[in-house]
Length: 219
Image (cartoon, rainbow, N blue to C red; front, side, top):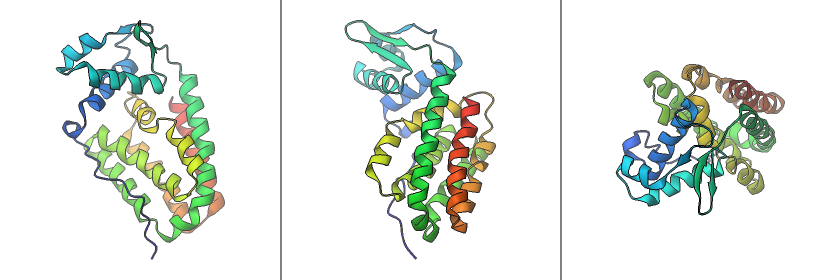
């Protein structure tokens, strides 16, 4: 049986194991989603560093990540400001993801059909995360379920375009919404795995596109 060398490393689902910059970024993201910060509000590095008990460097790193994902805007010599982030932008990201993942699935399915184990492992990881209410593990396994497929396509341009969408950040933004059921998120991936195991290219491609369309509606 073929073995795919595309599995993720230890998810380190416990937030205590994450770098301080990632932890700060995640807290700021959840505050933005919850409306704790108003659009246009300035996020002051020094104040945040004091709040989180860190130097300014990890705060700066967190703000750069949020800037790249479109959630804040960094203005040279002026500071970082919260964006008025519309659902339209999130929907556009999921539409682009759907197109990329459909293209990748068409290339990847023969290899994944022979070795579906890594994809199945991340579905089980999502199910366990849902049972435990573990957002960190859910984000990790959800992103890696799709990353395994993207890597199996063996198309570097597709993978770079997909990674440029900051999948983990936008997955987290969706998952922490109050109306999102993590069990439903996990199970929404099951038909994709079934199509992979069946070796049904057309169904797997259609489901890849429809899967992201489902999350467009959640944005």
